Length: 589
Image 1 (cartoon, helix red, strand yellow):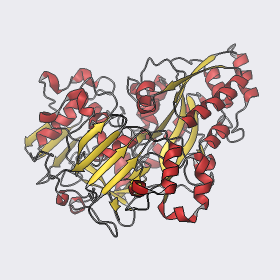
Image 2 (cartoon, one colour; image 1 turned 120 degrees about the horizontal axis):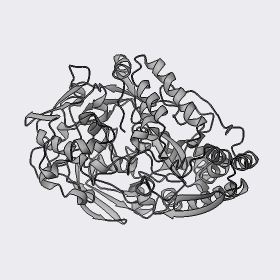
Image 3 (cartoon, helix red, strand yellow; image 1 turned 90 degrees about the vertical axis):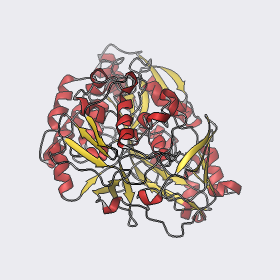
Image 4 (tube, helix red, strand yellow; image 1 turned 60 degrees about the horizontal axis):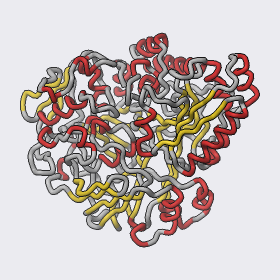
């Protein structure tokens, strides 16, 4: 996330009191199902900028809420990162809400609308120079789990450590803005462990923190709501080991974490609900179980026995083989959540390895969207995607450069002709995939389609928990791999720049396709300077179409979600910002 965003675009949107936001970035891949059909209408989530009054606690209580009990969570994978600076995956971000706080965050109102409010800060931040300088004041009474006060020095240190070399997976907006160096910010500042200070973050007193950017960023208060900019205390920083057991600033603290097996949380006695407008903390404990495949979790939720009555899942959706059964069972309706997620799913083509655009186009034309979608839930899994921007994005324009909607099962004849013309028949495609039962079936469908089109095919299974870490390496040995992306804010900037700008190429960065076209990068840099939001939207739509024409990767679906939870829980809601079940209002009935 390395380019600058338009000051005037953000200001123009916020003048009317709201910004449409779909924060989430990379998506975990359940291979499960969602709700809706290709004809379903897309409804964006509107996020207004709240006041200081909106930023006071406690959080709004759902009807019938009560304290006590243990909530269970069942899921396929352990969380790949819990260190805030490493968090950029939606599942990691969602669980982190229970024990990590930041300067700002999102408050859900009774009518379902959302506001950006101060979390640790007294409000959502102030700027007097158009967004080049941002000031935040910490609330009274905010504490770490050991009872020590959270100070501005903690906030400053938390930003400084995001520059450390071992931080490879989190967002890089703030680092870039503070140094003015999108792709070499670590050369400008190496991090705090050598004893160096970052002068662009100032702490004139224990409660005030001031950020001085090299350019204007009037929507930086939205950026600080990302878990990737959550706080870490210097006194408890265990560097790369902090990922396993972060120190709590939220309502719960980690008491046990057995990698790939379980995570247990209990109340943080030093969290004060009166300081927190975002989080409710009804359960006494959370017990999270990993290693549960999607078919198992669906069956357990449907059976609703024993401790599973008090269970939910961040990640597990309804298994494709059970979608029709779940939809037809009226007894399951009251505990079924349906929602449009903020993600577009792609099959990224590694442009470093597949340099010929004709070969990339052949992959796009050969790809069996219809078969792979059916294996993952059919229309309930998502709508066929033909653009890189989501329909939720400002400026989105429908287009279908390679006739995906006309031939969703793939066009092997057209693909083979492209390979023949490029003298590339027999090109080997090394395909990396999540090693789960569903993805094994999906991989077989892709193999059949690509071989029919004239490719050779080699499948490489990857550990699902560390999947993104593997494909995010610049020198990864794969040609094709799945990935999901949701904008941090639904503008072309956050939809396209982090994924397709050459400046976003680095180990752990989000340009998974390793696409680096200086002309396109310049167009992106120019687009963010357009003052009128409608005109800027059109510029991003044009860039989207250009990316399609360059065949940089394969858009697959606009992702949907359908999930279940146990009958013993109340307050389970769908977080449209992350595309997951939210833990913030859950209680045991």
